[in-house]
Amino acid sequence: MTIEEQRYLEECKKVLKHEQMDIVTMAMDYGLPIAEIRKVVQSNQSAECMREIVFGMMEGISTEALEFLCENDFNQYQMKEIREGIVHGLTFEQVKTYALKEMSANRMKKMRTQLEESLQKQSGQTKEDDSVREYMKGLMEIMENSILQFKESNERFDALSSLVKEHVVDEKNREIQDLYENLKYKDKSIQDLQKKVAERDKTIADLQAALEKKNQEAEPKKPEILPAVEPKKPEILLEPVIQDSRPAKKRMLGLLAFRDKNLPKDVLGTIMEADLSTEQLEEVRKCIESGLNDQEIARVIENNPTAERMCKMREILLLMKERKAGV
Image (cartoon, rainbow, N blue to C red; front, side, top):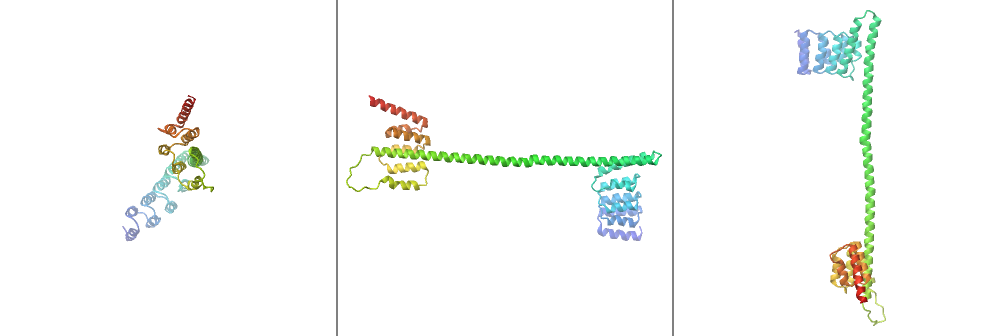
């Protein structure tokens, strides 16, 4: 090894990795010119790419091909197909037809093989025009295959785009529509519940009025002592009922317990503890309007029967009373 080569190796050790240094040493041992080795080093290629370039230099690639490999950023497999094309007899211009960064090494190999087969057919023909025609035919086949590959890629992209629209965009639209329908259903349910609560409050108010009417009819009239008219208690007691924030049922029953102390405690307690529904409270009101006494009302409420059963019990009690009255 000459002094110049030793100096250059020392310079390379400062900037190159161990694998790259092995390639440089191999090139020097083979006897390649330092000027050409320097081009490979300055191209800043990986160790695998440097090895393919050096192999090409050993097989006698032209300076133009060497500069082309050093200036372009091919991977090691693409480098190999370019080198193989030059070594197998393709001209540099022919190699450049498939030496593209965007093309995979596998695709390069197929195009290189087709060009080599085209050249082999050319060598067996005597006329120059026939060889040119064969070469152009191979080149056209390469171009057609490339166009076909490009078309297939576009078709796959269109299919993928359609799939994304169908399964992502349409699915989101369906979810939004389902959410909207669910909200509409919930709004209707809330309105139905509000309507039922209003009907229940009305039934409780009617029951309260019926109980008050019954108590007023049963209560004996007191003789008037003073000409002055005293304020009526119901008017005084209506205000706290209106301002009370408790549920309508408990509010009504609490008012009855406060205002009507003449009713038996067991009947009021039965009504308050039974937790009756709107339909059951309606039947209790009808019992009161029908003239049933407290004991009979308590019997109707006992064991918390359904509203239909309470209606039948009321009718039976009224028939029994009419029968006794007839006797």
